[in-house]
Length: 156
Image 1 (tube, rainbow, N blue to C red):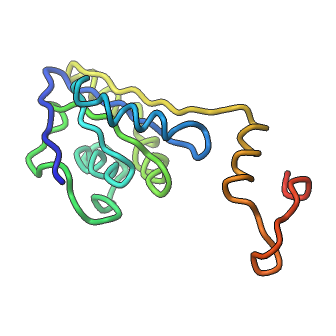
Image 2 (image 1 turned 135 degrees about the vertical axis):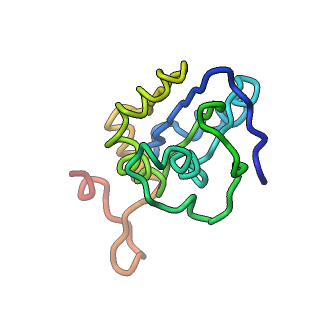
């Protein structure tokens, strides 16, 4: 489904790098539920590349629009008249590391020059709690996936 773009008097971009097992799904759900009211168009990780395609001239980005191949933004979308909240998660994290990060300073300056702002953020958590959560969610196995690897052996 295509998004109706919220026209913005000044462009804003909120770029969220969603690390696994760090509470990012709650942030994503909040952004999804509140972005329209706050004047943002929310792009989940399946459509994060569409944000990059709006800045193809300024970013190190030559990739496709998104993994599924479907577009949610109208082709006439202009970044300088729009505000976005964008989730970079799973395979889309690579879009952030390779597409955005190398040109982040220039991208921020572009938004400021247009009277707007670009903010990036991520959540992290206690390392021990993160490792335990990861182990419980995706427990490592051996012997053709029938036996669990004990936590004590799995930890670095």
